[in-house]
Every structure is written in structure tokens, then in C-alpha cells.
Length: 213
Ligand code: DX5
Ligand code: ZN
Image 1 (cartoon, helix red, strand yellow):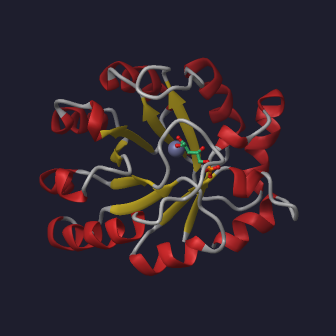
Image 2 (cartoon, helix red, strand yellow):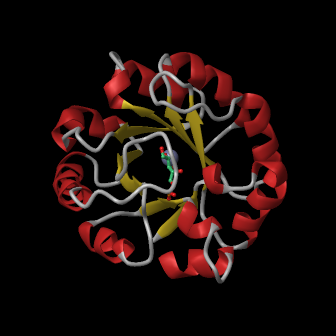
């Protein structure tokens, strides 16, 4: 299991320290939650802060856009050379065009699905996508409870991926811990995002990441 800790649960007064800590603690990707106050009822960080995150990180960035006007934000973050940029399918009229744009910028395109969105909604995009991010909470905040229906959804998505693009990875985000990660792994998840579990673990960040792996 690959682990992408969400820096949303970091101490933003010590952001560089907390980004370095997950990288030294053995994470695979640094998950960056970008919220615009419109698509979700929360507002987080823009390119100035993400640039500081990129400088502190020794692992690739996984940027999760929770915004309106995806194309604008893709252009804003592209110069930071993240490994992935994911956008919500619920907020995109031209997902295929946007994926082509992300790829043309040298970044791997990923699509995110809210808890209510069926995996079949993106079946005909799978051929051109590198990762699908399934939300296991309603996007907007860290520390929420895991929605168990994502397990069945992962299995359905896995079947579609095997048919359309076996190289496409599945990532799950929200309420992930050392108990539900086992079910997620069995269902076919490749990468878990975890914010509070990693940053608030009583035994520290490295132990939390190891527990998820
Ligand atoms: C929620 C974000 C998540 C969140 C995960 O909108 O996309 O990445 O920070 O935090 P936990 O693991 O605490 O649910
Ligand atoms: Zn996220």
C-alpha cells in the first residue's frame, strides 16, 4: 500500500517541518488539498504556500483540487511540477480536454469522485487517466468519519479499470485508518490518503505510515 499523508492535518505554523516529517517518515506522496471556498465550504492554500511545500518535500506532490474552474488552477500549480493533479468530475464539463491539458504539462492526470458519484460515470475516461481518487468522506475537512460504501465502489471501479486501463491506480481519501485500510487493500486500493491518522498518531508519524503500509 502506498501512503499519501494529507498536509491538511499539519501544523501550518510549522509547515516545512511537518512536510519534512512525513517524507522522512516513509510516505510515498505528499497529498495537498486545494480548496477554493466555492466547490467546498472551506478555503486552504494557493501556489505561494504550495511552493514552500514543494521545497520542503523530498517526495512527489499529489495535488487534489477541490475548486471551480479547474483549468485555471491547473495552470497555477503546473510550474511546481506535481506528480499528479486530480480534479473532481462533478465540477468539470470537459474532463477529457482537461486531462489532455494536464498531461501536456508533464503531469499525470487523476479524476476524483465524491461519495455519491458512481464509478461508471468515468468509464470512458479511464483509458486516459493515471489515477482515480475515491472520496470516502464529503470533501472539505480533515478528521471526518469513513463512509463504508467506498469499499463496494472500489470493487466496481477495479472491474472497470481491469477492462479499460489496468495501469490506472486507485486512491482513497478520507477517514482512513489502520483498520479500514485492510478492507481497502483487499478491494484493490493502491494508495491511501490519511491526514489525522498520520499527523495525530500517538506513536508518531513514521509509525502511523508503517501501520498503514
Ligand atoms: C478532505 C481532504 C482529505 C483530508 C483527509 O476534503 O481531501 O485529504 O484532509 O483527512 P483525514 O484523513 O483526517 O480524513
Ligand atoms: Zn484530499
